[in-house]
Length: 198
Length: 157
Image (cartoon, rainbow over all chains, first blue to last red; front, side, top):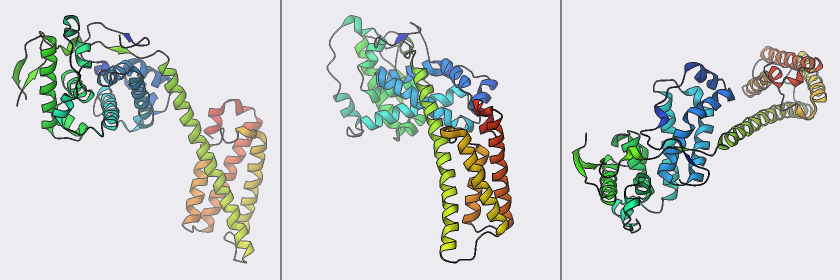
């Protein structure tokens, strides 16, 4: 568990809660500024926002700040949500943008060199038990590499979408992803499959 | 492009845990939203006050330099009535006047400001001052009827 205030909801989850739907009535009430509708939206999607931010940032307090920022922004912009995409996808994008903004602010002096990103990683102690824990493995990666892994492998972002998100070329996220997955699989002691990227 | 993928034998992203935030987080978010709403109301109220002050200043300056009055007697009378009504509204609402202020009143003030800025015709100004006075009378009536406990009904006037 990440800290005393954070609790697991599901020990064997997959994906995230952004795939849930939001009924039209709640959405319309939210557009009119109804706080009970916002509370219902938070109940449904707050955990997903928090999980995404925590997986990338690795810090519960920072993840809560992201959730607060995202929901305050949602309150003021939901009137402009036209419903072209699912509400959860829209909220996921708000969350990803806010999280990457934090990473960008923290790493502005570290540059965008992929090699340097991984060279800065601490040495990994050989620990068989940690080696099979997905969360521990993920937390060994630099935050930007975690972001690429989480957004691509869990949230389904394409490299094109990540290029827009990071303000980099597609090859940037491809390079980070390849390095990160190799590192993760090496640390996990598993075999790495090489597959065509489509 | 070839690259490694997470595998079931190695790192499996499906095994990442999901988390629930601190249960108190929602109350903090809701409180922050309420503060933002309150700040916006005060800003609008301050804008309305600044508008009234600038209108009064314009009238004074015109009189000081002997410039022909911008508004004829009919509009000036409406402005006087508006000031009287606004004083009554503030007397009844006290310190809550800004918080309970009418969105309609603020909208009219904005229209008045824009009308003065572009040098609108007297009849347009007179119409806006009439609307302003009507809105103020509505606020005062609602306050006298005891509707001030139902702030939402007042803000919609």
